[in-house]
Image 1 (cartoon, each protein chain N blue to C red):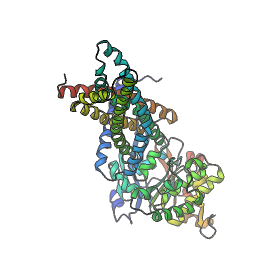
Image 2 (image 1 turned 90 degrees about the vertical axis):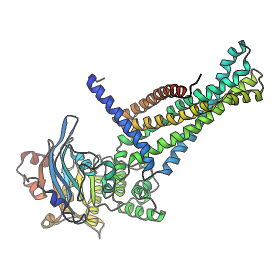
Image 3 (image 1 turned 135 degrees about the vertical axis):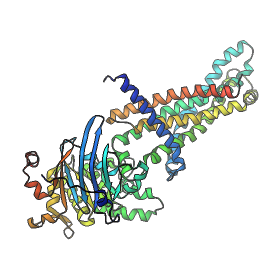
Image 4 (image 1 turned 30 degrees about the horizontal axis):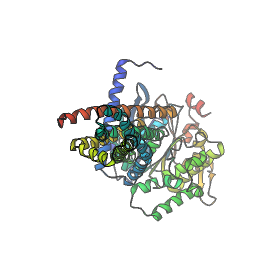
Length: 260
Length: 283
């Protein structure tokens, strides 16, 4: 491995942040400029949204079920098994639903975007697109960002609902808890702040996933090995950023809403 | 050696775009990647209707000249004029309109591998929007017929041979009848027979549509063939020009060495040059 001086490393890092910021800003700015590629947005929404549905359904269901299963033992000790619905509901809607869905979609789609755009980059298809008078930022990046933000929002809602359903299954089948009691307590515990936090996060996570995936794809170099590297980096960077953004947003919203 | 001709900004920008005296002008262009100089004070001009072949050893900056002409790269200093417009300081988004008037054939074809031949060739038309199926299909059929690949419409690039991919790339570049064509090693990696087919197509494009072009190539014989042949519409093949008529083909040669132009002239000047490096290069 080639050794890089600290000065060069810092310069490269600043350069990368600058390029990423430019890409992120342009991807949003292009929504307000012509031409807009609605057909590409729909295609990406189908690929990202419906394509991710099986994995989101499975993870949502199992996370909700596991949450109920793990917390039931502790709650039983204090004779508070009836609180299980509340626990699953708040945990899924506020935190686990968005973060698990975000990580699943990052693993599936940030890698897909990085490898697809990376392959186009190293085979000069991106340059060919520019040479043909088409802006790759508008044609390739903006539709992916818009589609990911839009679809992750709805995927998270599906994941939340399935998580609650998974919790309900465990509560009813293993702990003989009444369905009606479970659902009414789950519903009643939720306040505006929980729902707002749970729905703001997927918007931010979707933006992170798509912009990171596109950034690593658009800057890939070094042939197939470079595309592989870009794909791995996109998954790692988007997953880490999701966790960091989640922490910051949670803290910020808790401060704003003065959570107890 | 023929000295690179100088040209003034007034000359380039005088007249309307259609009557601009030079389609491409490089004025003292300098470009370095990291700390490695690639082009070091390049100046040349391409007249309307002219084809200029660019030679040089690998890494001498031949493809870089094409990318600079399209505005895909920016020079560190100097000025570049394309189709009567200065592009040196232009922003990326302001170049897309100009690029639609230029056709580029990339070294490895650079076809969009997830699109069919029809979608690749029609890419520019589809991007312009508001076009009917008929408005797309007719020109696609025409250009595919020009490159003799009418039967590949629904195939994907991965299903084509290397030579067929180059021909589709040429069809894609010429569908909107560009005023300027840029060819980046169009015969690179192809067998001699296929290379001759590609060169015949470029000659056909030059003689039928009178398009100006810059041609980067490693193969000297390709450029010599272009300088000594014309396209005969009757036989639908290229034919050798009689020796007395060779000077009538608007063909120039540009040789690069160490980031500088060491030759810029016609076929006659090239074969009679006294420069030892060039003599060795063309021998």
